[in-house]
Length: 193
Image (cartoon, rainbow, N blue to C red; front, side, top):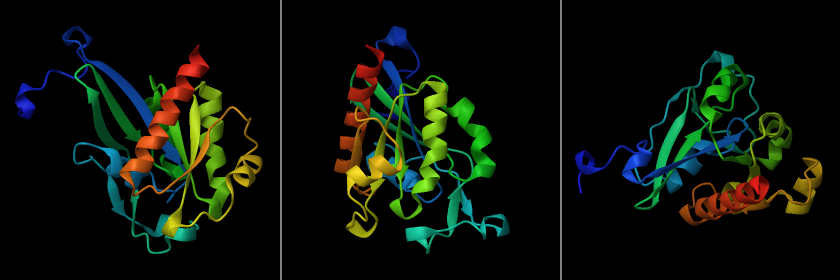
């Protein structure tokens, strides 16, 4: 099947149910990588070289980072002929947060990626989701395959209730991204029931 034969993904009359999910988190937490790991299409990214405005941003575990998302990342996952997941990766730098409101409108939930070397960066995403009633899970990115802190410590540091899923992921791993998205959908279903 070519892309020309694919029905309009936003036409619910064609029997396709689109589901919008957002991927949030601090700068350099792995959002673009996460979307790219799971998307069935080549993700649309808006990465641009770092500028002088970004010089003072703490790079933590990503000291070699040379680009940043300046608008959104976009990926798609077709679950079956009637269900398509659309992933919107939000920009992490504070100066691009104006895009969060529109990009998250209609989302059923969010995966919030956290970098434990800069755990405070996750609070902005947590606060945003809570303020907008967006169910979320926290995915702690294992940079270099290592988990710097156990998940209970992360839960306490982020002051999360026990019902909010916190899991360890490698943002480069399709299997880990899939596991995080399944946890998010299950959590969102519980939150709305």
